[in-house]
Image (cartoon, rainbow, N blue to C red):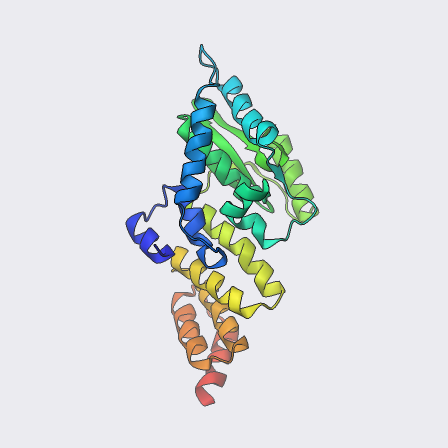
Length: 264
């Protein structure tokens, strides 16, 4: 199944781990998400036997973190953070290390299988998880072994990730939609490929960003740039026309590029 087929079947991307595989499928030797799902089922079965009786939310989360980060050995990859493998869920499961967002997807999936209302939270520069409760959000950081994150901790994560360039505010702790999580996962790869000027890889990540967020003019503009680097002027012009149509404000750069292409 392609990403397009997955989105047609599950437009809200409710099956998050499955969507995370489809979202990066061109980078995988085996793009079938069944292996990831089966592994998560196995871990969820083991975790179910560790749930506290009588029920206690904090002890249940402790059991989840114990399984993922102590018993299974998952950890944030600080040494080779920019390695694209850190964004590929099958590779993350195999290597036991990944990005904040890929580790968060695993954490969220397992927490949901335990009956929690688990969500992702896309802080600037750092992705974390949360549980919706009657008392508000309880936030956790899977990149740092699932440690709890309050407002002060969230502010510190933002300061650290952005070198102080972004001021923290409480609205940053809002839950992300499933599509937003997958968009951020793919954009992590996209930015790495763009920086490396790997236009073949950047083309599929750019296309997947458009599939996930077709009304975003920036994604069409970025793919137009990629097409230009690949000497594909007709495809670039088509993307520029769509970017111009979607752009809420005039973009002189798009208009200049289009004029140049139409004259050539």
